[in-house]
Amino acid sequence: MSGYPKSIKNVISEFKKLPGIGRRSAERIALELLKRDNNDALALSEAVKNIVSSVKECKVCHSFSEGDFCDICSSPARDTKILCIVEEAKEVYSIEDTAGYKGVYHVLKGKISPLDGIGPEQLTIKYLLERIKEKKFEEVIIATNSDVDGEATSIYLAEEIKPYGVKVSRIAFGLPVGGSLDYVDRDTISKALECRKEM
Image 1 (cartoon, rainbow, N blue to C red):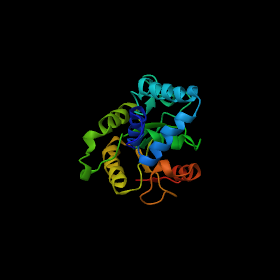
Image 2 (tube, one colour):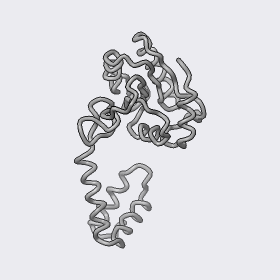
Image 3 (cartoon, one colour):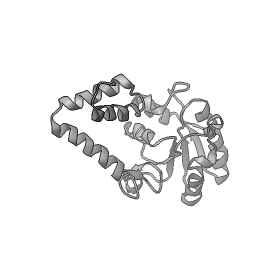
């Protein structure tokens, strides 16, 4: 990389910061941009600028939003009696791709992981419990991932939610042990929701 002009080095360096992109991939992307029409490269630049300035956090569910409330929380067509809890906002869209779930969501923004120094207070659990107390949901589906921390988080959540008299179920069928929702196909996710088990 030492022979490239400074501007190319800077772009490679920025791409390398992204997950899953090593030095070679970052270099290929940067050089591909130079081959493209100027308008293509500028469109990418504008899209990145827009995502940074426009996308924020929904004030209700903590998912991605371009306003105070996301499209799901704002929709009158959603079943507001069913709440699905996920670890990250990207998992909302994995579930939405199945077109089988019509309830609302809550994004934890992570999972309880003592080894990483992440406890319940670092997540949005306080806001989750406030929502449950306020809204009187009929069912809460816990859709954390099936790795060790995801399972521990689901057990913790079930214990916290049950005193509110809400049915608590766990997404179950078809998800591989240690698997992450964003790597699972939509049919498997759909089946996992359909075959959820009460906790």
